[in-house]
Amino acid sequence: MMSDKRLVSQAKHGCRESMREIYDKYKDYLLTLANALLYDIAAAEDVVHDVFVSFTESIEDFQLRTNLKAYLAKCVRNQALNSIRNRKIHANKHSEIYVDGCYSDGPVQVQIKKETSSKLRRALAEIPVDQREVIVLRIKADLSFRQIAAMLDISINTAQGRYRYGIEKLRSMLNREVEK
Image 1 (cartoon, one colour):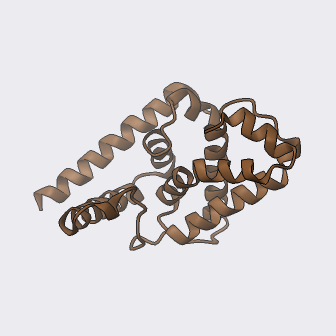
Image 2: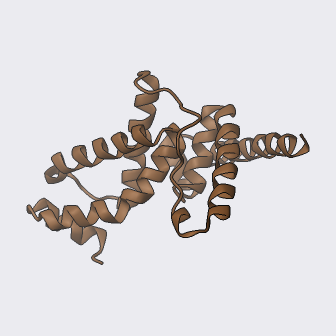
């Protein structure tokens, strides 16, 4: 697989195969991130589609200054938050969550993953958006606190604090559910 710089360079010169390779390389990761923010697989697919359409349309002027994965994650995050702000979508707590590889497991493992995902999704929906956002970017997007801080225009300490408080709230909620 080619490096991102080379793919972007070739895409700038009209190579459709390079753009397709960028899409194939990051679509699953971005879909997982969008779904984690939106709790709606159809809305997540729309967000990822819109980001790639916009990226394709602006490729000639695009300058790769950081890594492409972080750039596309930031675009997905912004598009998802715009969708939430504009009330175009509503969090659907019963939507299917995208889990990599769950279809290769047996039926019992699939059911356990669905139940666990459902519990976690419900708990995540109850914590403040700023904490949920940092948790999703840290865990699902695999971004460092430095990258999250830059993306959200906050200090690294603020990003770490939001993460820590969010994780503590999740732990508390999930422990209460286990005690039931």
